[in-house]
Length: 445
Ligand code: PLP
Image (cartoon, rainbow, N blue to C red; front, side):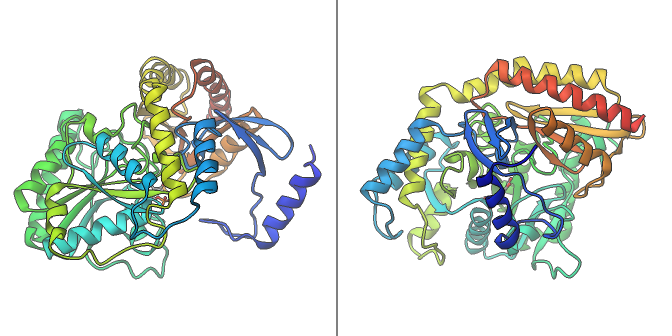
């Protein structure tokens, strides 16, 4: 199939002038996306694809939601930009809507442009409040691609000449399928992972640790839903040692797991909670840090030494106000929960039972990982962490050919449609995935 004339021009200009994220530039052949609606996108050939990636797991409200698009257009006509030191109706409203949905006393919001800078600001706040230098984050985590955020990230994306960021210490979190702790049950995994973290804190010196930064559910690194009690256990350890708990809900927040925030579902209130993505589904870049009373009080007497020209940008905040309101009015979070528990969860379990190439499926809401293995007994991944392989390249190609756009990472297919996905769409995607897994079985057998 050939690209339309416009799509061919887009592709040619992209290859000539656009420098892409995370990629060696020479071999790139990016798919041209010309339009999108709801759970679907259309490529430069005019082919419709079911978006099981939500792009970067951010279009929680689906593509082109009319109320969000209208809010952005209306705000652009009224007041397209305003400096962060002034008050603005959209920023105030967005902050109220976020504060009302985050758990506990996370009642003030510092706005950023995305998730990485939200994490960097949260870490800075924690260091200022505690006067301590170190930050503990888990291996198999993702906290962003900027200089400090990538070093907070616990996966091998850092490159050979990376100097690292002083004071970042990694620990192992719970991941029963590949347990570091030789655990056989969720209870054991939880208990041993907490005891490991307690030991890391003790050996690093509690008086040197500003923060534990933790994804509520590690997303990009594999959607490892923590065993019940793990997040509460981390909260307890932080309380015991005066350590700030930063919960990264950039990917899990705003409906993705079938709740507004996963930490709230687990009954845990962090000191700082970072968000981005689903706050306005990425229609305009926005992120932020929701801040608890204790930390707000600290800065009551002292200025916060940090800021961004576009903090609380009115177009981004107008999109957030419209998106959160529509999610509430249209029962979108409840939809994500129902699709997860009634369709994706049970149907993915059936796929896992039918396909020997599937090692494990796990997830919550509209946030699932299908882990592919060449040897189920040895749990040998079909691609290395952070890398690719011919099998995974074939998975990507076959899915696209069959009309599905999944989120692929290492040896996993992530099933992350918009929170608005209908049951029929979810089943359509699962049928395609079934056929993709047939191909995996052929390749690994
Ligand atoms: N934190 C988590 C958990 C994420 O998944 C991401 C992005 O995928 C980030 C932080 C970084 O967000 P951004 O790409 O908006 O900087």
